[in-house]
Length: 446
Image 1 (cartoon, helix red, strand yellow):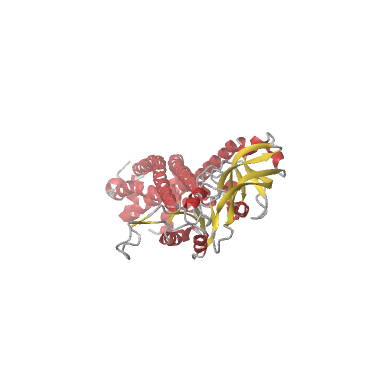
Image 2: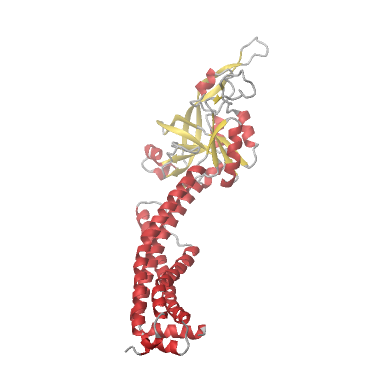
């Protein structure tokens, strides 16, 4: 039997029982709808989490800190060496070496220090955090009221919303006004007079003032522990933060070292050219004797969690499709009972068993195709409705819109293909049963 004749015969048979076949097709469509809706939710949440982490500057950042000790370091070269050696200092020289590593874009200190600001003659305690210019694209500053820093050396500040509310109930009115930052500066003491080639005597802590212009207010909470802005309430450009030479917690440790005048960093952030370069740069940093950490490993664990989550969503979404496959079996079995005489005539005219089997496969595949297309369209509409409803809820709470459900093109193709595959699998038993009919008995059937 020619393929064209078989297709025309299958279409005619589907039209004769249009109501029953339409209901079966709708059952398949409902199953595909639930499958697409749940899968799109899993994909959308995964994309949302990945996008937020990528924009937060975590994927392309490596956090470097000095090791407390280096157990057994150097004993292979010197058997008589002590078990532990002092850690490699994380100072300006180390920063320059880190900056010269391949694929490193920038290296900056993690500058955070408690202090107070003066606004309209009133003091307010806060925590200042330096922000690098690369952090402009991070999600923390997307919804900033006002603007980001005009340059990395501008005497400007961005307030966190809690601090802004302390300064004034009308937070928007703060933009453009000046505040005075009062901080403790680390100042190097001069060398002892009369002593040739003597080193500086140490450093002292002196109060200083710096006037800053408020250029923006951050609505979101920036209380994380990563990056230069974690736990900060007042954000200033990184170059300004370094220029202030504000005293930090590690200054006391510097005072106890043999070289108290050499500034040591508590931690450094190394930004690389891309997330794929982290695995190349991080081992090189560890070989230099520093402790290095990135969230790339944590993101891979998060991806595994999403994969398990997607599997459960697909399992629950497939339950409706299993019920729809039973409807396909029922429809085709009823078609066999109604068309026994027709099948007998086809076999008497020379149709082989495989032709009869292919005929029922075509009918099952057609129901799967139309059900898959309709179900995918309905799943896409449900995905849009989820996003629409979610963004309405967020808008009422003055939060930025997000996309929690996504239907990519590969999901559309996979859903239609899966629908056809399930329909063909469901049609295997009816098709085999129809192919095994005895033409003599089929012709005698009334």
